[in-house]
Image (cartoon, rainbow, N blue to C red; front, top):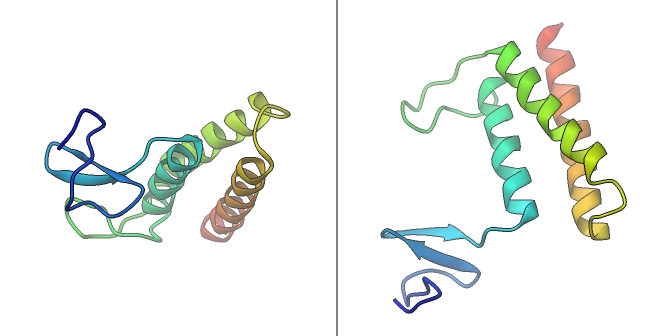
Length: 102
C-alpha cells in the first residue's frame, strides 16, 4: 500500500482502508451511502450486520429529509451529473416511502 491508500488487491477507483477496499470518497459516494441507509430503513435492503430486513419509517424519513436538505443547500454548486444523481435518488426514495407509508 502507498500513501494514497492504494494497493494491488483493490479494484480501480477504490482504496484500501484497514484491509477493506472501499470506493473513493466523493459527493456521489456520500449520497449513495445515505440512500443505502434509507433503503435499509424502508426494508428494501437487509441490514448489513444481521442480514435481516425491517422497516423503520421514522428513520427512513429522517434520512430522506437529510438528502432533501443536501439537495436544497447544494443547488447550483454541484456538477450536472451529481445534481442529477441526487435528484433521481431522492425521487426514487420518496416514491418507496410513500408506498411503504401507504
